[in-house]
Length: 71
Image (cartoon, rainbow, N blue to C red; front, side, top):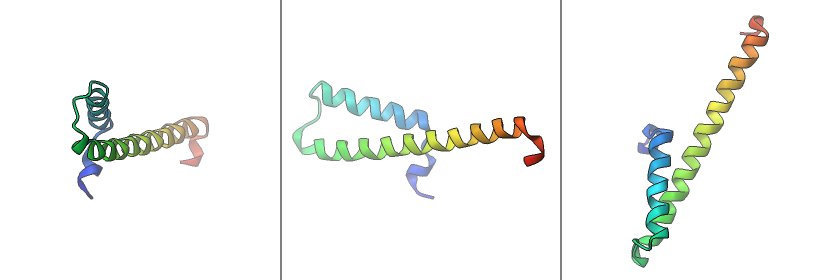
């Protein structure tokens, strides 16, 4: 398990918002821009994976409610 596995969706989303705000306000130097964009891409991937996992969990719960014999 690496460091990004422990980050919650909310933490990743909030950090992503901070990066976007910094970029929009021109607060990031050109030297750090590439690093921030790479981090943002990673955070987007984390959020996407967590949303997909949650969607699968919810679908499984709904399926179980419809047919309790399946579980």
